[in-house]
Length: 300
Image (tube, rainbow, N blue to C red; front, side, top):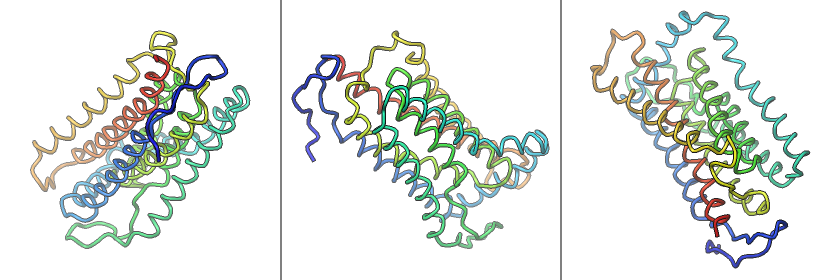
């Protein structure tokens, strides 16, 4: 596959349009697969990983009691409501802007992510017995989290570059909230949620390339100051939240002895921060992946 920029060709608006290189998107897909594999190996195949994961799940009961059962039930509706919201936005953008190809690609990627999650969950063996008191049944990846994250990704793919920084942050935050809700309701361990995010990131990276290449006339960057949704602080906020969450994980794990059997919320907080670190980190990377190429192209 030729990944070099092709000669400029005029678009509908009369501006020069160059071919989007494939290597950043393929690299992002490979990194996502590596993240998925690493998550599985550490949290399922090692004693330390299993202990951290299971402790977070057990301690989630205390968090559920503090926020109340009704609040927890509302949180459990987030994955389903995200699909409804995403379907409305994708349909509106498709009809209003006639982005049929982008919508089709985004929906295929969404379906592929959810199908992959179910196939992986069914294909993986039971969790090995490593001396940790845990359910042996495999629950990785989380179907709820995949549903929410893939819905947010579909919106992210079909909106124009000027909307993508804001759409990434809002959609990413919604998917992260949905992932945390599965932990609070004790549906899934933190690693199940993280694995789901990596699956969605993989398919989003692969889908982004044809979306960018088939829509050169609307995949144009007008500058961060051109629209409120394009402001740089959307992207910076993703990075800040990702780094802050990673710092929380590091601080708690270095200050808590292993195993910390007296803890009631420490590992739960680690699980929440872990979900936020990966979720916002991938959101930050996705924003750069789908804005930098068009930014370079439109500046030529």
